Length: 456
Ligand code: UDX
Ligand code: ADP
Image 1 (cartoon, protein in one colour):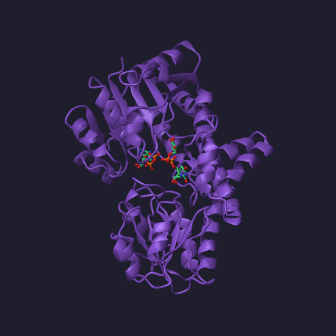
Image 2: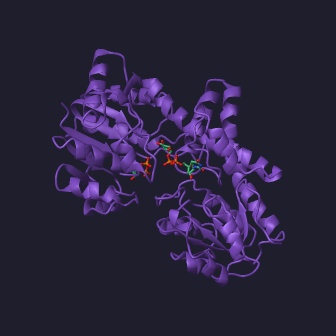
């Protein structure tokens, strides 16, 4: 029975995952280590450095018991029996494979640090999303040099979604563990199964070979992203034909073989996973000479880019073919509701396009404003920021809803309308509001994939 668990990387995945393991395994000491002292300081203080509903309570509970945070990565490695690797694996921005391949420098550095400091029998668990066969690279590093430990590498991809991380971790649809089909590999898999079995029913813990596990994570995200690109592609057809995407989604999703979830048309998917994982999959296919397969999945990303550009183009056309000098209130910058994460958020590109049109952009978001400010400073210093949506909309020619924050559904839109320039435009990039009601107030409302409600 494992008693000392370490996670390297205290981000959106590592932090919440370890807090839940600590909660359900009171007999296990759980340490989370990161090289970023601010992040560790925040976790330690009981106020996580990321916004995630319900997380703070679980972390605070754990801190007084068996959950620890440290910057002493090396010492923590020396004391661990099981090490989760949850460092960031962004898309490469440089050199060979730039824009497609995963940047594995943090994973490799971590493997080398583990090799230098680990002691005894250690199970190393890939948590970060990684390209298929990364486990092999780790194994080769562990076999190199003269480490003092014996390693077994597992793949245990995380399927939590941000904004619902605590619930997803508490009640996962499945836990996936891939390992080598050797005696030592099977023992390592069983050790990790035992950890999860503290709160996850055994039948939901799937064990596979290590490559299936790595590939399944990429494929799960590719399928989800594909659904979004599919419905978004149909939204473009709806806008030309007066079909309504909400009605089409409902009708199509009522088929139990298709199902109703992940069929919300919008400004496109964002987040640190979907685009990155598809690009990873595409890169993998190209590597193996599977050109047709690569092009097939690449189209999911192409459609997502198109959807963002299409949204801005529709704004320009509706607003008399010019946005120059017009104030646009951007409602929501996070890539989805209930998170402060803006990685690959559609708002990034949409705001950049609006700035290129010489619009005066004012961004509001209940949680992601600090991150938005950091990201937009490079694009244009004229972008304004307001925590209060009413202030953001004041004097604006248009509102563009880019994140599905629940609070945007029921703001006092009569008050907002009164404070705006006329004609006032409302571009609902998440199909959040009651378009007819807003039209009744006076707005010209454009939803995604729906007939517009305009008086012009
Ligand atoms: C995703 C996967 O859901 C999760 O299993 C995996 O572990 C990580 O990647 P996440 O990126 O956190 O999680 O959020 P998700 O809820 O999947 O949303 C991703 C993006 O798709 C968001 O920008 C969201 O707004 C968008 N989306 C989602 C839609 O546009 N329409 C939908 O119907 C669903
Ligand atoms: P994710 O969404 O996958 O959790 P994040 O970027 O939120 O990704 O978190 C990854 C974390 O990993 C960051 O806090 C970063 O500081 C940490 N990290 C990166 N490289 C190392 C390393 N070599 N040692 C320890 N921590 C690392």
